[in-house]
Image 1: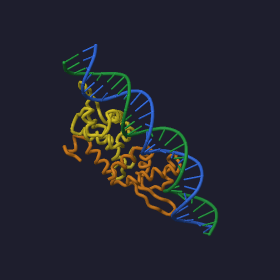
Image 2: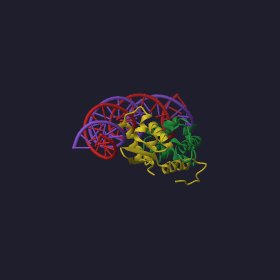
Image 3: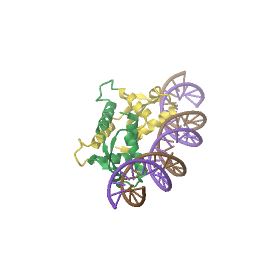
Image 4: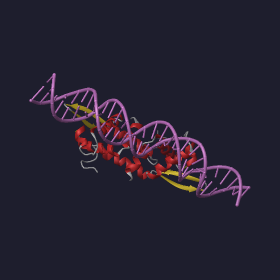
Length: 94
Length: 94
DNA sequence: ACAATATTTAGAAAGATATCTAAATATCTA
DNA sequence: TAGATATTTAGATATCTTTCTAAATATTGT
């Protein structure tokens, strides 16, 4: 996991909202954008950050590009957080 | 949980390192700082961000101010992440 | 009360980020 | 292949962050 990229990606509220929209399944970039008051260009920038962090996958379907969540990275991230708090992770956590 | 503040706080590598140092128990600001090549002033700024997010608690002990983790917020954060990925959280997760 | 130690606050500078508009690229359909 | 639609890239700008130095505040011990 590219930890730094993942945390940075998650730090923006628009990006978290994008991820939430993707919970229900694949969506095209434009469909995702409908929910936000933001230009396609800005949205595309957010996608790039999410892709960089490997939080989403893309696939072209005709003239659309569809996005989907990459659950693996979420699991890794959750684990990293778990490791961070004391009670659980045994003494020498990474 | 102040979600936005928590995510932002976690997005900086120095702050995550601070949190990791605190896994082993209470530490004074200065002790934490020894591990980093950063001025006390900058360190103090990071503490402020962590406090703002409620990720750490502070208590004065004589001339020291000791920091400790607030596990509750980590749990909340981990839960938020879990909710974010599809398979697990049932359909209508917040 | 003074000096020493520990930490925070204020203010400034450099770098990163989010957003926009305009232009480029890719795909489909006529 | 030309036009329409969907998305990304380039370049600019305003705002936010990280970091610094210098100064302020709090506490202890003499």
